[in-house]
Length: 454
Image 1 (cartoon, one colour):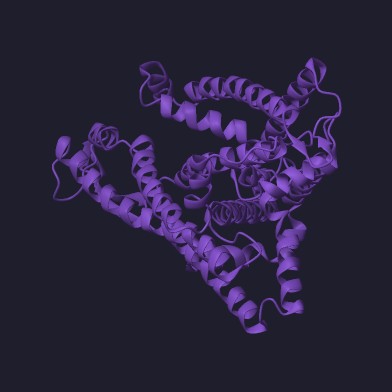
Image 2 (cartoon, one colour):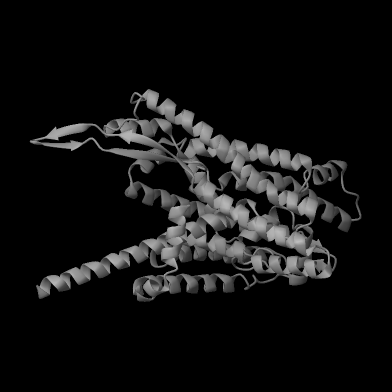
């Protein structure tokens, strides 16, 4: 935490920031790209009735559509050109990453370094186009079959509407993918992650305003709102601490003689993050749990329009898997724990790490190289993942308790909070690195000038 505070203090040194011309250009480019993204979230696709669409999303706010609408910054609820946001790219990246564990060809590409990674990135882009087109077509079909109290969500359904929707939404996703890559190269931070964070943060002012309005009307007490703000600060601190936490394993390198000199003999460390799986487990768990609830909600809405009573099975799903129910929370924790172990096993291979250490002559003191090192790494990582899964479960269950028990009007915690915190930490670290590089450049120029004068 001390290093994070030092980085933030250095970043907020506006005197140094004012002199860093390259950094200012990057910051302005990032802000300009985010403005373009936010403007795009208000440009609707053609052929949609906004009144009916708003009514449908109010009914499905607690389902999977509400979660994806949060990630898209409200673009899905308004059905704009950026309705899919970069979620198809996220899905394609996860699929390709999982395929590297079962496909020898992809695994070999992963080991080839930057050249192999370039090919994998190309496969991910192709997968993004396919997934975006399929999701866009599914949205078009779903909108055509959805009706509100005042009529259908689509003004003129048909083949032309489906084609225009697929082209518009897929083009919007690919434009955001290009914009994110430009932000990464010419701006600050990971562009695609910053776009996702911007979509989440866009809903924060409305949530704060709704909370203050409830306090004004007396629905929430002033003391409760103050406690909520204090708890929010504490949760953010907790997430920052856990995301930076790591177990450092000492790695020793033996001495070797080259000619008359001795090289090596130094020690390093192998950092193992407490939360190796990142935000993937909560996303997977939420998607699987919210899918049945969303289907049940659509079935109930269609049945009520047709004058039919909802089926008993769908009613049970809507009751027992609703937000805040005991079964929902138990399944949520179980799925988060499962995906935490599953995804950690995908992204970190103890055998490959042990082989790399052995290849370069490194070893963990007290542990024999090779198989024993791999077993020791697996032993340590399994115990770290237990703590990491518990941390993810606590952060993700907290908003469910606040909403269901205390009627808090916004979703604070879970995947959204973790994305915002981690992206902010990464962006601050990059700004700090640019400032340090600028200071070094200034020192080098001064040294050259002094050398010329001397």
